[in-house]
Length: 92
Image (cartoon, rainbow, N blue to C red; front, side):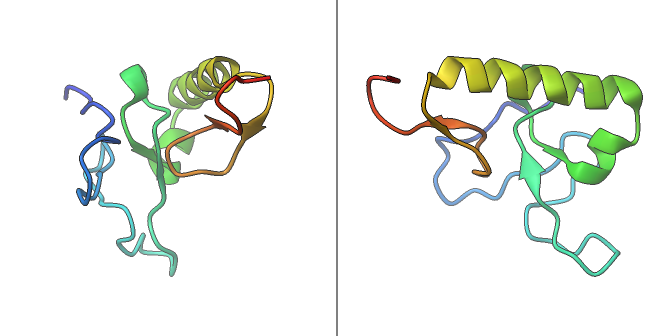
């Protein structure tokens, strides 16, 4: 299965996990809503359950998060659904 690209620019579109196809906000079967992050290969959306289901997927998610964090600059906001983002335009 080819990972979908992160549709951050697709306003109003609800992303889905590239592995299980669950959509953001759907019930996860455990009483919670599915939360997706762009930490799959090529920043594909992935849900927590799929990310934790394999050491390789978890390692890829950590690598993706680290790359996004570094690219965001010195002052960043974490916890955003689209990944880390800069707090100011300069990244200082």
